[in-house]
Length: 328
Image 1 (cartoon, rainbow, N blue to C red):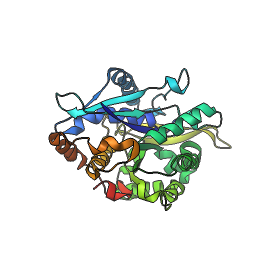
Image 2 (image 1 turned 120 degrees about the vertical axis):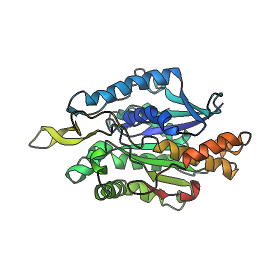
Image 3 (image 1 turned 90 degrees about the horizontal axis):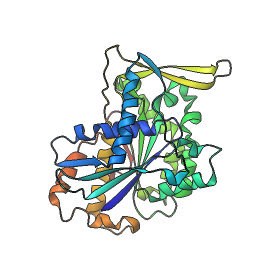
Image 4 (image 1 turned 180 degrees about the vertical axis):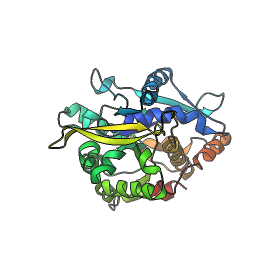
């Protein structure tokens, strides 16, 4: 079976695991009437189910701090596993496996070992797509003063510049703001969120404009409301005087609010839309050669994927920033 690797990129605490959990929970309900089936393997289903329980527990109290627990590597990078989903027609053996690779956010920190840093670089090299999870309150609140500290955009940019060299095949980069419910209440605040993403990652986007990189990059912004009914409340600092050691608090929109994520399937829609385009291009791209033949023998599956991919949102807070030709 063919495999596609997708890296969940971001420092510790920004919401990589939260994003992956919300995507997992909403897979089935957003496939709709298409004849697609996304099936997690047993280990992935068990781990993500535990994380889903943690995510829903944010609704147990009116106000909570932070999100769900992060990823751990008890025995170094090699102990980390993929979250594997099989993609195919309902009732049939999957024809493609999508491997979502999460990793401890501490691998971006100053204390990360050379082995850990090398591991993240290799993930980027091997992945056809990258999801950059963005902590929205850090980007939006207090004029974005916590953005550099929490989201570490300069370090993210440096990682891409060290890996994306001499590209010879297309790459999909998805900017996915999470914990963004507060900022999607109206058109004005939604527009501001999109603007802040562009400003907050301007250095990386400038790199994507480079002559040698530009032809191969597809970049989009897809905010994900991972809970839907919990919004950012306030920031508290352990050291109030110097505003150090921040803790972000969230509250329910009302006391009887229920778990209701929104748009968590959008990254998946964009991924499948991108893969379908690679298949239709019918060109040779090194490690992605199998796309030339993928789906050729199954037009029914190709039609189902196309129907699902048509649900990509491209207006309001959603935007295709670069490489639209790779999504048509």
